[in-house]
Image 1 (cartoon, rainbow, N blue to C red):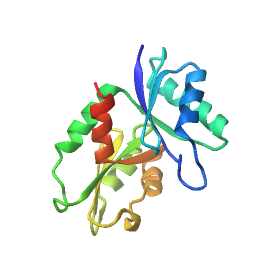
Image 2 (cartoon, helix red, strand yellow):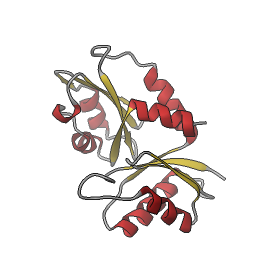
Image 3 (cartoon, rainbow, N blue to C red):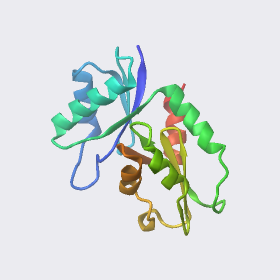
Image 4 (cartoon, one colour):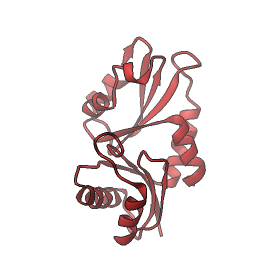
Length: 179
């Protein structure tokens, strides 16, 4: 059966708390198997007879949003896509200092073309971005809480739900769940 990595946005950020144990049980009780989570920030691996990323994304979204009482956007990648993403981002040179933190913003669908232009052209002091397919790579030489290119701004520019992970998390998940 196909396996998918699901990245949840807006879980375990005040005031919305989702216990990963309850999340795993709810997905398992609703047709998903081999459900695993990685840390508490909404990284979930599921196995399902569904073969479509879009169907898995919609199903997990609907199940979790209904169960936990708030909208939980879900971005889904296959294990092969996850591995390819980690490898691709690792191969990109930093447009900032070698110490810049690297984040990957995963989008639920292809970003709006105007958003791609805005994101690729983002040149704030200590901040750069580059769109890679449906994902946005963000380099920061400023503390993340001071960045002007926030998850909300990326989502507005992309025109689709997004969620951001540190590259270290993407690497760990690619190693753990990738193809």
